[in-house]
Structures are given as structure tokens and as C-alpha cells.
Amino acid sequence: MKKSPVPTPSRNRLPAWLKTPLPSGESFFRLRSLVRQHRLHTVCESASCPNIGECWGKGTLTLMILGDHCTRACRFCDVATGPIQPPDGSEPRHVAEMLSQLNLNYVVITSVDRDDLPDGGAAHWAETLRQVRRLCPDLGVEALVPDFKAEVAQIETVSHAQPDVFAHNIETVASLQKRVRPQCRYDWSLKTLKLAAQQFRMITKSSFMLGHGEVREEVIQTLQDLRNTGCRMLSIGQYLQPSKAHLEVVEFVHPDVFAEYKHIGEDLGFDHVESGPLVRSSYNADQQADSAGIV
Image (cartoon, rainbow, N blue to C red; front, side):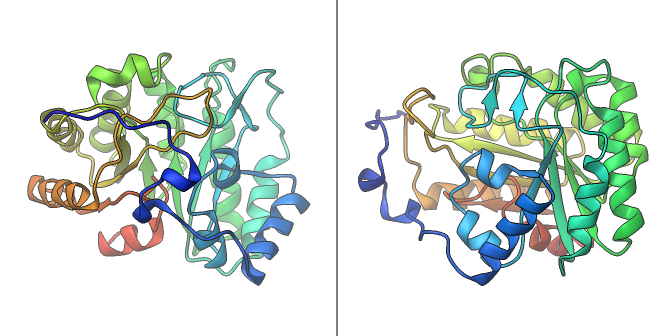
């Protein structure tokens, strides 16, 4: 499939299907206040998610632990890199306390990469999950974790803390990994998902973006590779350039193409495929888990 280059996106050049309203409403501002009160971070803000208004307006969000600076510099991502602070030992409790104040059925927790830590942050992850279980025993929890360089011990540590869903994003097709996320490895992502699903019996989920210059055959291969790990849920969305310092968009993919990949994924045996231009890994995560019969 031949791709046609598209100019660097700006707000007034986006296709109509990619435009979203500005955040507003009582729920949005209440959530923002709670995040500030507990000194927490969200990927919704740190990664400039276009769905922040919709999700926060519904009372859902994705918390980001282990700080707001990442040790990797993926060229698609708006999360900052730079000076890294030691993990905040009180953060797991603050996360649980904040979630206990919200009337949620399901939450996604993610983190920056912490390659500076001997365990990649796995122990901090496990403690966060334990604290959330303690204060919010009925809450469905999705752990959207780094690849941990596919280290078995670190994946085991998080898995034993029993998130309802163990998620890790592969982000793009194999041929574009070095360009899109140069400090990561396609094989690390596949091995992490496979270990979680097949060795530690986790329900696993992944996500990737379109618009970096991939072709149809590569997307289908990625779907097959993920399914072969035992991955049960998948999100596919459109890459949007956060700033001029990030990779340019090669193509704005039409919604009909996203619909095609959804059907292909379902035919391959995924329990649920969320596929659309504005879909992000955590978008409608509660509905995905429900439709897959998980929570």
C-alpha cells in the first residue's frame, strides 16, 4: 500500500474526524483538583492526550506513577525526559487514597520507564497495586507497564500483585521501532506480553499507532505477533505529532481503515479490538474489559 506524505499537522489542518472539543465541565475540574491535591501525574496530561476532555468529563483517567520524567526518549511521546528523581515512597498510598474518593469501576495505572532503577520500578509498581487493592477492593485495575527489558523477575513481581489486566504497548510495527522508539525493542515487548500471559497467566493487552509510514502487511503481521503471545485485547489509534520536535505524521489514516483492522483483529481471535483515529491505549478501557468479560 503506497503512502502519501502529509504536511506536519496543525489544529486547522487536522481531518474532521480528529478534532475534539476543549475540556470543560464539573467532573473535569474535580478530577484535576484531586490530581493536584495528591501530587500525582496523569498520562492524560503528560502525553497530551486528545481525549482528556471526554474521559475526565466521564470521571475516568489514567494515573502515571514513578514520576513525570522518563529515562527513554521515544520520538512520538510527549512525556518529558531529563533529570530523574528517586521514586516517591508515599506515591502508592496517595494513588490509592485518591482512587478511593472516586466512584470508579475501573482504572488504568501506567508509568514512565525507569531504566535507572535496578528493578525498573517493578517493586514500586507492586506496592501501588497492593495499596489500591487495600483501599479499593472492588476496583478493576489495568496495569499499563514498561517492557522491563523483558526481565522475567520484574514481570513476575508485577504479575504477582494481580492487576486485572497486564498491559504493555508495542507502539508500532517492527520495521519502525528504531525510528519511533529507539531505546526499545520489538522483541522485548513481545516477550514481556508472552511471559505475562503464558507463564504468569495474566490477561494481557497491547496498543499501537498508525500514521508513521507502516504498510498494511506490517500491521497485519503485528496483529498476528501480538495474538501469538496470548494477548487478548488491543487498541489501535492515530499518531498525532505533539510538537515540532517530535516525528512528523506520515499519514492521517481514514476511519474505514481502522474499521478494517478491527475486523481482522477479531478474526485473529482477540477478545476485543478498539480501533479508531482517536483511540489511545487507555481509551474506554473499562468498556473494553467489560466486553471481553474480564470485569
